[in-house]
Length: 170
Image (cartoon, one colour):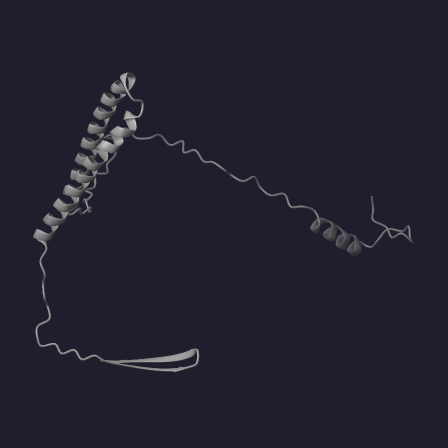
């Protein structure tokens, strides 16, 4: 259908029709290409040993101090021992609870708590002693040191307002 003016029935000039067509096309929604959401690589994977690339040496850059490794191993040992003792006590008290008081399970936790605490404390003390034995101090500065600090504090109070002045000089 040819665009026409409402008051006239004659056809519009070509440049006006082109302008109207451009305006109508500007208001049309654009057709966007479909978005690619996946990709499959169809190239065959080479079998082991078929590549020409030699293996690359990868240095191990992790540095763990020996005291930290020892502390970790000791903590694992304490945890495993406490778990074993706890399981054994639980089994014993579970068997006893069938015969006697039902609250012996809670009693087992109360009895084992000091042993676990002592084991953790022993591990911490051992690690601290081992670290203290290996520590040393390196003093770089050599010479005399003179430090003079002078502090003056003046305070004035008038009614409920007070003013303090701290003057610190080195």
